[in-house]
Length: 239
Image (cartoon, rainbow, N blue to C red):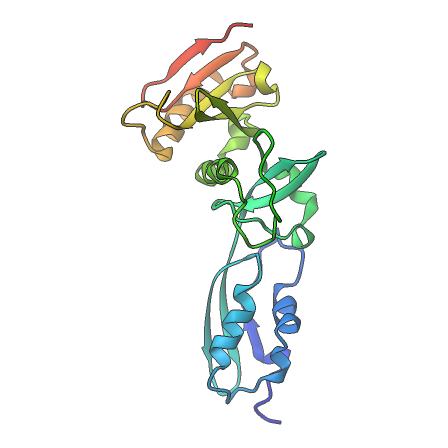
């Protein structure tokens, strides 16, 4: 029939390189969109729902014409790989939402920060849902605020350490806990600082330091760099 929905009548925003799966096909087949027609008064709602359940879709808007359906998709962007279990990794976005690993381009795995917390809560780890551990969510938010700058800084991991009932988020180099550490944020009252500056201001502080001293990875000493107050506090840690 003239108004029967077909895949070629469904125009979808181009998906980014980090998604290896076909989101349009998954939405088409998963929600039986071929059973709809362009005259269906609920067509826009049904098409939107078909895309909203895809874990890689953050936001969607749908517009219908007499000849086609245009779907504008805002895709979720991975910011880090969460370490869990025995050397297992899962991609998350900057809100801590778990992204479907089967639709993720695994060749890009090493292009992202690692997130490491002690014994992370696992739950069902369902794609499209927020990771069921606040430490992972907060670490993912930090990764999202840093963006791609971490590579230039020499940072490879965000590590959450629990001290005196507070969650201390540290940026680590490839030297791990034996190398330079940046205290980026602390959640909790015991060792928090008053008037903590925002991520943009922290980034400026750290980049000024790196411009003068080079990548953090080049610092062989066990240095601790606290950027939270707006004034760089640099200490050499005891062995």
